[in-house]
Image (cartoon, rainbow, N blue to C red; front, side, top):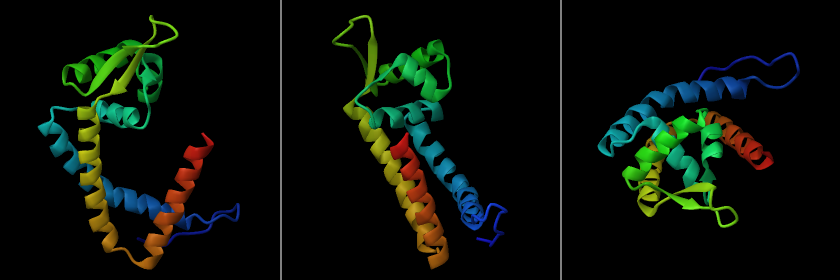
Amino acid sequence: MKPSTVNSSGGSKVNADRLADFVLMTQRSCILNLSTELNRGNLSFPQFFLLTYLSSEDYLTMSAIAKKMGHSTAAATGLVDRLEKLGFVERVHAAEDRRKIMVRITGEGKEIVEKMRGHISSGLSDLMEDMDDEDASTLAVASDAIEGKKLDA
């Protein structure tokens, strides 16, 4: 990765530029591999992304799904319909209000997410083996910052 400059606020722009280079370098590989694997399971990228959201939650409401996916509730319902037909998610009624529909991932859905994570992890691991110490440090700092943001959210 190429070095960069320090910005005017005194913070280092180097890590951001180095991380951007890493993302650009890895995205093609990850997306191509992900696309090939998803085609085997007849899944689209939005369907897979929804499964990844659901894999880290007990359940999500349709409105929460729509918000996370940047879709209308109607579009989110269609997405869930297709995943339900594939056996990757199920709808359940909320205990406190039977009119409220909750969506949760099934065991089969969790399996496909874990399989895909494994493929992505393996590919990234291969790329990271070739990193020098500075690149690895940059990636670690960025990862810690992202994790910190998730915890604050």
